[in-house]
Image (cartoon, rainbow, N blue to C red; front, side, top):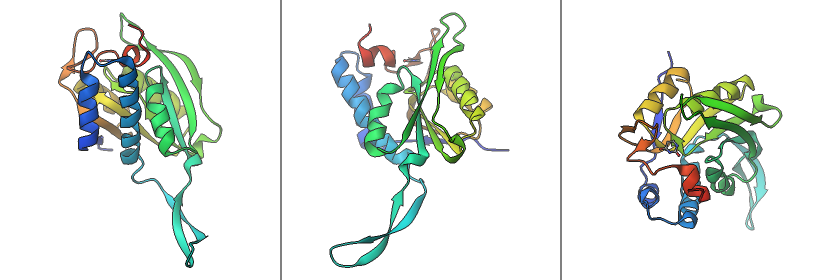
Length: 211
Ligand code: URA
């Protein structure tokens, strides 16, 4: 049986930026900028074991063989809408990556995930998928997104969340024990509305200034 893996990204720069983002009086533009910065730092960890291949190059002094990654083999899968705030920072680091989108909304009564959009690049069986959603709360959207993604048979799947709740991690790994999760913090719990506490509030609203 596969043992679920959670990578806690405890780098001081990530933790510092997360602390700033949690604060309720932070402006929309600062929240957006920090999410961008933190996603670049998290991309560094998520891509740590990315495959490389050796190519022949010439330095000003001599010829050598040196490693490169094939960015096109990576597909960032954005869970809309808050996942889009994670995307640009990841693309800054892996500019050749492809991008897929999953549109899900949370039914406010059941908290279940309802799909309204799904679009992936061609040839997913040769690509490594990195799923982006800042908040792994109940885990229902994450489970639904990865269920759909698995139908396209990507070479591998990883899930990146800025914040996770223990309940969400448990739910996610009950359905997808083979998908490692990368997160900057595992908070205390979910509240009765399905929000992570202490958390940072509604990531989409804070990112887009919709509240
Ligand atoms: N989605 C959010 O944006 N915040 C939460 O706390 C939970 C789900």
